[in-house]
Each structure stands twice: as C-alpha cells, then as structure tokens.
Length: 459
Image (tube, rainbow, N blue to C red; front, side):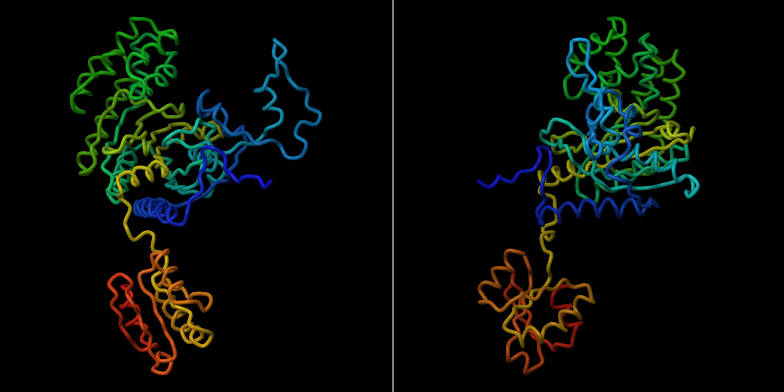
C-alpha cells in the first residue's frame, strides 16, 4: 500500500497562483526597502545553538528547532537523568544538538554584523527576506515555517531611524491596500513601570504578561502577575496605565506624573514624544497609536517597540520590531545600537486574501500562447516568440500539435489572455494572427513587426 503523501503540520505547499500572490507581497516590500537605501543580505537556515539560545527568553528558547548532530549523534553519550529517574531531555539535547533552525532574522543579523564588521559602512542598513522556524502550536495565522521580511539600521541611536521604519511600514501597506494602525511603545517606559511598582527585578515577567493583554484581557494578565509574585500595590499602579485612554499627547502627559520617580521611565517618555513629533512632521498616512500595553516579548528590545495591526481583519500583528542597544555585545561588539522591523509575509497574505485585495492579473504568467499546428508552423513562430521575449513579453509555444480545443482549454486554465494561430495561410502571407481571448477581437500583422505584436498583446 503506497504511503499517503503529507507535510508537517504548520507548513504549507504553495501553488503557482499562490506564489504569484506571495511574490506580489515580496516584490512590494523589497521595492520599498530599496527605496530607503536598504541593501539585501542572506544568512544560513541553521545557526549554532550558542548563537540562538538565550536571546528570545525562556519561552522563545522552548520554540527553537534543534538539529540532531550528523552521524550517530547518541554514540558514547551518557543519558542524563533527573532525580526521579526520568530522562533529562534538556541536558540530553545539549549533548546531541549543536545547531538549530533560525527563530528570527534579527539575531542572525547581529551575528553577521559582528563577523563582517570590517566590511561594513555604518550605519549599516540591510534587509533580509527568508523563512524562519518555530516549534509553535499551529493555528489560524500562526505557522511553524513562515517568511519574515526584515529591515534593520544598525550603528546609529538617532530616532530618525525609527521614523524611517514607520515610513516604510506606512508605504508598504499603502501600496498593498491594507489599512493599518501602527502601535508604538518604549521598553524604557516598561522598565519604569517595573520600578514604580517596586519590582524592578520583575520587568521581564511584567512585559511578558502585559503583552498578552489584548489576547486574554486585564483579569488574566493580573492573575499571571500575581503568580509571578507581584502584590496588590504593584497591580494598583499598573492597572491605570494599562487602561489609560486619550490621544498620544494626553497619554504621555498623564504618564509623566506617574513616572516622576523613574529616570528610565522619563527617558522613555522623552523618546516617545520625540518620535511622535517626527512622525507628525513626516505626514505619515497610517494611524499611529501609543499603546502602553504593548511589550513585545523578545528580551533584546531596549527602546521604541512597534506592532502593526490590520484595521479590517481580525488577525495577530502583521509587522513588528523595535530598538535594541546591545544585541551585538553578546558576540563581542558592544554599544552597537540598532532598530528594525519585521513584516510577517504569511499573515499579510491572509489579510489580503480576506480583503480580496490581490490584483486580479497576478495569475497571468504568460502573455501570449502560440498554438502548435505542426512542425512547420512551430518553426515559423519560433523566431517571432524569441523576438517577443527579448521585448519582455512572456510567450509559450504549445509543445506538440493537438486539437485547437485542447490548446484553447490550456490557455483558459492558465489565464493566458492572447493566443496566436499561425497555419499555412499565415506562413504564405508572412503574417501573425493575434486573438484576444477576452474580447474575441482578432488582428493580423507582419511577422517581423515586433512593435505591432507587442502593442497587440498590451505590453
């Protein structure tokens, strides 16, 4: 009995139509990145685990895919056991796995900067569009293999870099036809919250918990914070912050009085005020909102943080990022501040499908099909097809003589808009017939008049 073919959960195949739609997203993002002076790099799918571990917090480390060492990985390995006699899986993994699939593109980017620092001009602006892997539970909008499209600027602390990324976000989603809200916060402000709560050592617990506010609600966040050891006094300080209303300026004003005793918190507010001022001056079209509950779980963020939500489709964030002041320090290059954003191509795809916002012509991969009427007729159209390809027209010649109905059906299935049927009469006259399969209109022109043929197929 043949094995039924399948793929792992959380991964997908993509048809030619889906790839046309995905490439529309990639091409749009790539075009915008380049328009702001970002250059493309790529890094390997797998990294050393020493590069990846400890950069994403405990929850992130659990989602890393480990790669078993090549050969007999377990040969000569003493199986570590816990006190109850069970296998210590974490200790065992460290003995048999030295590499892992990348979890995101930012940590590999930091590793790249340190390794290649002598070759780079700073501030270094790069973009990267590659798949990443996370051992997460698959669900709507969440996959185990998915693509990220990242842009980072490293080597400058200026908030002009943050502004540029907000402008990139605004431009990308404007071109894609998606209305979005850009949510912004600052990790220094979150550190200030931990300080005024009397729990500066709990900043990670606080950020992880409040990052779930939109998903689980205030009561569940408070319950998690209590579990982490925060008392009623701390929760009394946090609750009004998480429920604060008003426009961005009003929120910043209200927070200044709360943060009076926290130098970090006040610094975060200063940075937010400056950034929103830059955004206002740059006439960003998308709505920008100071969201005090926004935390973003990754531990390496130290300043501004961003998250982008689609206004008209219920789905998780479709873009996010932030400022990191010393990510390269762990690889031996301290005080190299950077800021970046990551576009989630798979979620953006789901949003565009939900909005039916993909251009209708994306499924067209071929502009013109030459019907195959026989060996002599195929030889006649070959130089015409070659000349058209030189002019950027996508052309196919049907591979073998077949009934015209079969060839017309092929054109219909592939959404080919034009067909050319050249038989004995066309060969004798030295002409080419072009038929518009949408309107039925048919035109004839000299086989050497490439300009006329290009015009006839709408290119």
